[in-house]
Image 1 (cartoon, one colour):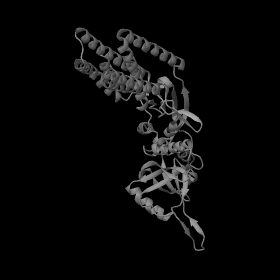
Image 2 (cartoon, one colour):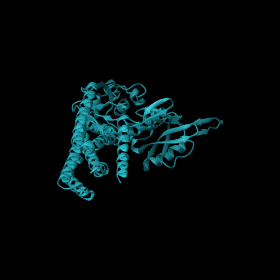
Image 3 (cartoon, one colour):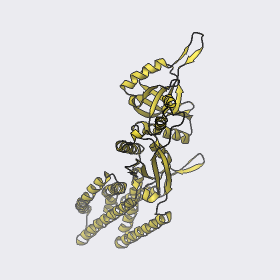
Image 4 (tube, one colour):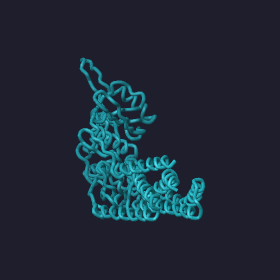
Length: 451
């Protein structure tokens, strides 16, 4: 019986040690002579990682010759000509359009998965000021924000607009596997009205033969913000209302495929969230380092490690073998919580670090209270396994009742649209949930086997 108990405890402790090594060390796999950690990185907030400051200025420049229409070029009145050649016509510079442009930018940020940002707008001139979390794709995200999102299919020769955003339903991102590699594409899906127009256009803009037997191509150009992304003819009528557009070429390189996916998703983010009535240009785009330096972070890690070590020593001194086993379980709890934060893609802010500390202390205190109750019962009377289970159950229910209000507060904080509070709430949510489950799944069998 003692051998089976020892084996069970050893197995649990071995699993805890393995999880701890993975959580704190990572999992390293060699791929193409490069050893890489496949564990997700921690997502750090602006207050820990630094921020990107972006100033989107209302474009007050004039259109280039290519952007100027024939009507504008033929206009003989100098003042009218100057007004029409402005990128932003003065008539669109209204408070309503400024607000609409800001809302479209916020939609694009949400579609891009950006949650850690601060946005302000100058109500007088419409300029927008952003503070974004610094990431590898921040420059790409900024390019989404400065785009107007104007989609057109035009007659390449006459420049007549055949289809625009009003006919477009959505832009989807997809990929297919070919013999030469993976091909990424964007699918332009048109609404009911646009579908009918597209079918008619696809029957008109084709390659045909004139009376002399020469091939004549009537082409269309697909444009985004006045820039042609493809000029083409239609080989056959399009009846499903979908135009698939290849992004790049088929590739076997993961980095290239990822880059193509970014391009395709960027087009979807820009075109699926409305056309900005205001054209902006990036007037400022600079990185500001966090006031919390890497040295300060390392100091925080060292201090936290020392505090955990003191708590572990106290538990071992007070409860001997049981304390040693529970200390290993305590380290395992921290490892599991940190792993959950990674896989749940929770953004860690300064307030989030505070939530980690609260969660760790909450588990440690719960552990001590359970041990105190069990040891007190054992001193009063010899503690049997059934009675130990009953003591653990009663104390666990009592502790759960105390944690429930904190759990509810954490859930409420998760839905607050302010990252420091959201980060605190989400980490506290996972911390308390892990505490409740870990006490039953890991701590309980270890303690009962040692009683």
